[in-house]
Image (cartoon, helix red, strand yellow):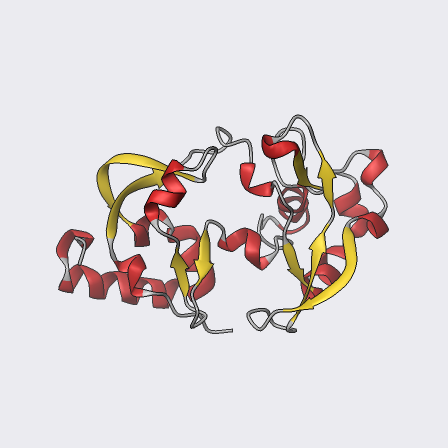
Amino acid sequence: MPWQIDPRLFRSEPMRRCGFPKCKAACCLYGVWVDVAERERILSHAGQVAAFLPPEFSDPESWFDVTLESDSNTPTGEVIHTTVLGDGSHYGGSSCIFLRQDSKCVLQVAGEAISGDPWSLKPFYCILHPLDLDDDGRITLDETTLLVEETASCLVSSAKRIPLLETFEPELRYFLGNEEYDRIKASLKKEKPGFSPA
């Protein structure tokens, strides 16, 4: 679907990415909501995905919850949750079933092995994080102070202000497409050199 971005992402702010693997994939604490079409795509590669999981978690029937929920932001409008495991070695004591001990995502590792694209099996909400959707369905970012002050956040403080459009360039190129991303970036450079805050 065509995505739009909230004007908040046109600002520059004193934050940067955490620098994986320093965060140890803290964002995988509670698993993720997966569109049912994404679940089917993952299950269609079950053998290849299972090869990257410990034997005790290799059964595809154990990968997802059984309850469907409505979600107007996903293609089918229905999502299902990945299984969350008790994990004393992970931040917060739990983790998504697809999180490996080396803090890498099984779906990302499998996707890269299958197609060369690490995001080919990755759920929408995983790619989006730590970005979010606002009330109008536009891609946005929660308030900076909450993100950079949170323990094991995907974002940390920066000594200089960095354009959010650049901080999240890989994700925004993925959702918007290269042409639209480049158009927005060129427009901002023309209007606001350096992407200075509004």
